[in-house]
Image 1: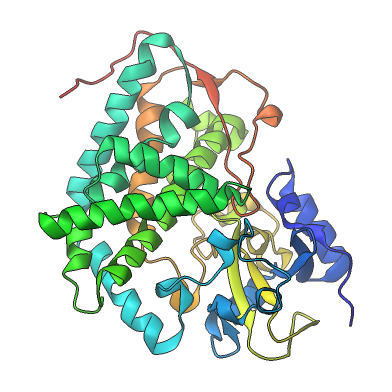
Image 2 (image 1 turned 30 degrees about the horizontal axis):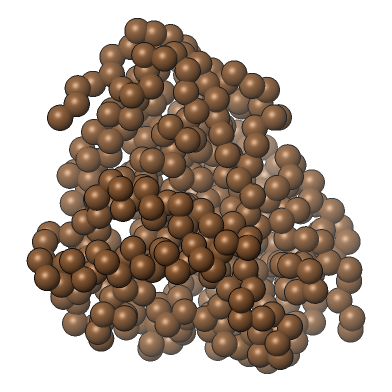
Length: 406
């Protein structure tokens, strides 16, 4: 069967109302919809909650190995495509299934388990305090550029033994990588170059950081596998945590149910964090799975070699899994923001620690906090994968306690 005319995948991230796009696609195609990744390159967007669980749990049918992508094999997608950094095969835990994946996943799980959460919380609180101290006297700030993009950058750089300047360089590289635009390939090259430098430095002078822990892990065979493990952990934690912080702050400032919390209302930070994971998760669209044989999914015929995009945001809007009353679902964490199955995110605990601390600190330290632009005019950072506010201009009362520098 010839697939329908595709909707650009970016229509699900760059619109003011993604729920309306999901509803239209469901009405036209069901819970699995044909979309366009770039001109002439189609894929299936899996929007159904149950269908998404199916493809993430059945790796013998839906593989994570991008070498199975038919459109790359036949040359439709060229090697220099901007989709490459997000879609092409990587020789790391993301690229393998089965025993190979299990071996490469253990170092990540062990590294995350070894994080001292109390030390990490203190480090994040200090980072937040210093950043707020820089702009508090102005009475105005951009909570994305001045805050949300910097907090996870410095927190994750610290975990891997990177300094502040290296953290800034990583951020620039990853913004290009996640944008899937013409500079994506160069961003990916610079990203791996920076992490490679950190790896070589720790090879010469070990320390108590995650880079050293990965270098010493018995399941990683050589510096190449160590580097690729770093690539996975840093890329998964950096940009997604920025988005989670920014979206949570946006929600707290614009939604009456949460905005009231700033003035003593009933719904708090954890409620906002959970709602974002349902409605606007850090990764709205996750690449990808590749069909190993012809199969039926959600009433659609999937051909061998087809790419399937995990519609994590769309699954959060699946009408089959909601009662219809958002207030009744407070505290519900059965969302799929972390994906599911063997490839689900291993770092949800430290990600929540960073995000919760960042959101709580800014709300506590900036009295009278409010947006200075209409909520509907908040711009989004261009990407087919994430839906992150590009800026959150705010004003607040001064003077304010800013904390001390060290």
